[in-house]
Length: 335
Image (cartoon, rainbow, N blue to C red):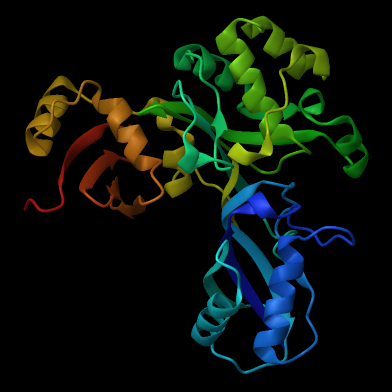
């Protein structure tokens, strides 16, 4: 018997979440039936890393499944992607240890909440981003975001019925960052676990801070007292993405340390001049430009000696791993 570790991506708009239900279509049901059809067996049970809600999406969702088949992992990927509907795709498949469990072995998860902050609705982002047409104060939102980082009791940021599902409402947030690029606001949060509706409530709270409906002090009180009254509204599910699942302990010396310390990124005047010259663009804020590219879905981050190297479709960026200084950047076509 093999234990497969599988990563998938899905658009959750047409599904009632991941977990199988008797009266609604879910990701789990569709994937299990496809595995059964591929292997010509009864649909096996798959074990997911998370219970995503109805309408929530995933860029990298992990599940494990026990199968009695010699099918190569490459064949599993190709076969599943032939059978699955167009809004679900298998990204990778590997043989895992017998005792690996996609949910219980998770060390950290990262969610992204996308907001279309343009005045008009974008029909191409329908069900993929929350439309908020009013100006957002990104600086105020980031000031409030810093309060969430660390270990806290997040009872005030959980839907009431969700508290009965867990033994504790204490969670650790490793990083929470708000950015905006060309009218799309991205709230990115990484932690060791999340409560029911927690990310959507945190995102709603940050919008309330931007609007002036909540103050920094009220956000502190929400965290300290566990009172839902001091937090914000629960945003719709269509802007929420499970972005990444980690099975290794986050380390300040590893790649996750760069993601967790984006607020520490800086550069020198000489470095700014060098980067602008190399890129050949009039970059108004080199630090924000770098942060946006590190958070890009296409970014590949690796450790190279004392530095991080960030490779995107167009650029190569070098950041010192100790001081988080942006050393240089250039277009990939340059030598």
